[in-house]
Image 1: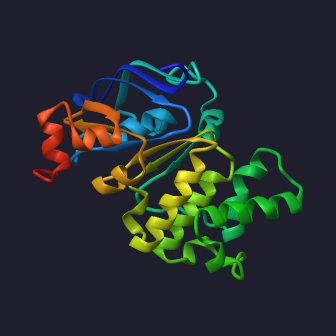
Image 2: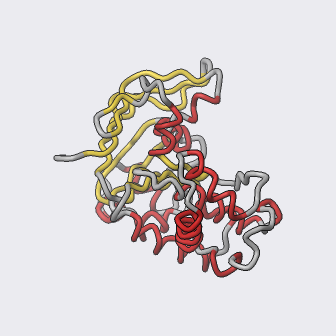
Length: 251
């Protein structure tokens, strides 16, 4: 691969004595949607938490191996806040700030030094539109974000992740609290976003990965069992366990 964006080399993660990832090696191309699939406790969430170092919040977590972003050592970075501006993260359940809808989205740009109100207004609207939320909240921008419905709060979290224009967007089961119609609309947004960023999509909806992922990795019991172009992985998997999973034999 000529220009990989994210590279895992023999990465292992354990929580205390319990291994969560085992010797994972994969190169994620720039400007693609990389799907991450597998059964429960396969290591999928741990995989994405490595990329923006949210593993740091788990005292028992230990890592081995090498992980690079644009050739830079992720595990060795001292400025983790700068890393997290480059790598946006959306978790399965919404994590709203106790601020207005507007300020939820404007928070990160303000912290980065953006003070111009017109520029902030434009950025907030753009991010809310990308998250398929603008039409529902444009007349309620001053209300507390935590008063939105669960699905709306999840889309607000997505808008906030987009507000600092990340180079990488990690989504961990983003659609768990969103209705199917909105999920499909956001999938269309992700297809557009990959033109400007790399998207790492953890999903238990196997067909979601098949619909929109360019490349997909199948994880099981902490190991990356198989990785490749998505359609090939689904139609002609090299590993028998991969075939069983994508065909619904277990999950």
